[in-house]
Image (cartoon, rainbow, N blue to C red; front, top):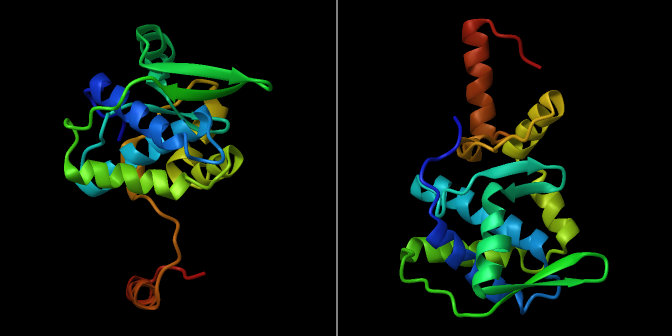
Length: 187
């Protein structure tokens, strides 16, 4: 497990622009929601397509996943005039795209994943988006490692396959059967 090689800055920039464009219609829109949508896009793509969209690394920050490459937004994209960082009272960052995103480099499946991620988080407040992202086992594990070491920790893409969902009836019966056959304790 670990990070995925090959961060694609061009796709990252276009994804930021597309999500920021969508975000203009949201009741709640700020940088926090952008980060959560980017995370959801990359991790859902990894789960469904066996590869992330941008291969950005996501750090397990206190309030949820944050792209390690976020400097691209604030240094490169703002400086080049692709996006403006509108800071309001209370230090809320609201990104406004200044050009249309170019989606020709995205597959139809990637665009579907992006639109799905936008839809999932569209009505969430930044606080609700943070809480939603903090339920993910990958973030929880990376955050625990951060607390233990004091170092920033990248959330491994492979953790998208780890779940703590309840077993269905068939799975529970099969697990009990295996436990009985092998003498494993059952709780």
